[in-house]
Image (cartoon, rainbow over all chains, first blue to last red; front, side, top):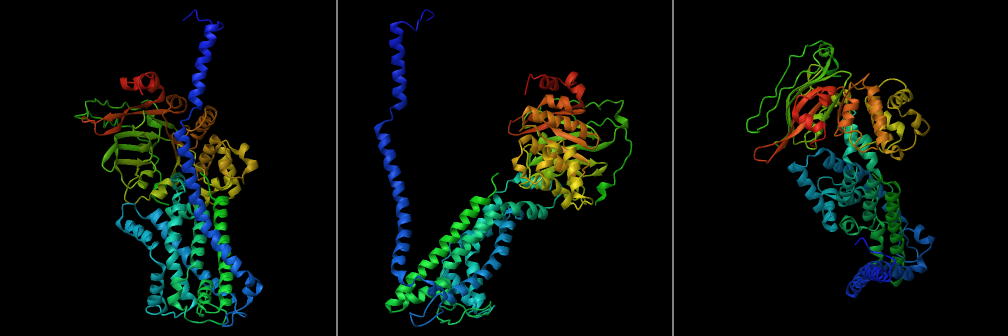
Length: 311
Length: 302
């Protein structure tokens, strides 16, 4: 091939042919593949649309229905049997009280459990594995079961706290603890082992390592989990029904031992009423609740993106 | 503090301890190690005495029957091919292997004459005296200042923290680069700077020994050179043990070198590391007594 001269006409033709073949191979995707790709992409897009459309429809429908009552009176009026005087004020105060105690319960217990399972329990230990399986199962238990548990053990039975804010808080805390534990474990596991080794190699104890290195690095993830858990707890109605949905609270809850009402309970109550005005009120209440929940979840996502440590 | 701080400054004469008998079934003749440089050895203080140290993970041996003495204010290098147990061995020296539940260390390991694995010894106390620098720089996700101050703070060291931090950063040849950005996150530093920060963090707690597990394997040649220069200075204050797969590095920085090799079981089921030769570095690289060492350091194998 040493006498090959690329300037000759024959060589030019041969080279052009070779380039043509290369260009053809590079650009010629089989038509069937193209079609399959498009169909699959369209199906996936449809799935997203269906999921989002449900939420949009819910918000839109309630926004339209509840619009006449979406004003400051809704937030400042207390409980009333007259639809014109009724509002969410007592319910909002009640929800705030309940959530304050839920936070108080779930942070130490949830984070403590997560730290134990991730940092202290040996992966070999039967106890740790049993706890792990149970936590995952607990996350799937229907919420009404927790309501009955709260009724039998917290409102009555061993604790006998009655139908109070504290009872509601304990019940909801039990309900969302598995979420907190699962998310906190993820966050703790995301801290690389090299950080623990670095700390231990300096002569830090296991607790010092957990407290001063692992937990600070995991805080954004843990906070995200706590917020998601709270937003779940705010929206829960079923577990509260056995705990006093029947009681009609006309005052603002004022402390842990006060009787309680909460936003989803009041909305549930309104929906049950025969008067059409209450349906409008319920729709307005749903919009308020949804706005609070979406705001909290968005904050959780922002927090995670903003502060999560990238390794 | 435990009894570990009560060093015993005795001048011991090396008894020519062997421990490298031929292993039946392995087919590999293990030569006894010559005591290093008989002339000055009597004046050197021993930091570690390893006597038949073996490590197994879940019953599977990783390192077998290592015996060697490591001396004060020297750089001791452990070299050998991958899988020869260098890292496993160095992690015995500050009881990092305790963190691996399936690891089991047998044999005797004396630290200044005290049994490091004695029943009363607290591994946390051990690690205060025997620091470690890891293969991959692992700064904490905190400021440069807090990275260095973390150790002195948890150990409750007395004195002005700013001075402690400056001294450690100077000791790690990082002060000039870091002094204007002490409050910025350590993750913003280059890999070489991060590794020197890890060294600063380690010397801030004023240990007796610094263990380095392939400290330069993730770094470029310039950063590597800086850390090697650093080690030459650090050995005046500390005793250093370094694991490296870079033979030239061992030749450049160490006073004494141990060559480990992978040994295969007759059935080829298991493999473990065993020490082949331990001697003054110069001797290992110019006139090794074992042909396998010669093959390795001359680049014929490995």
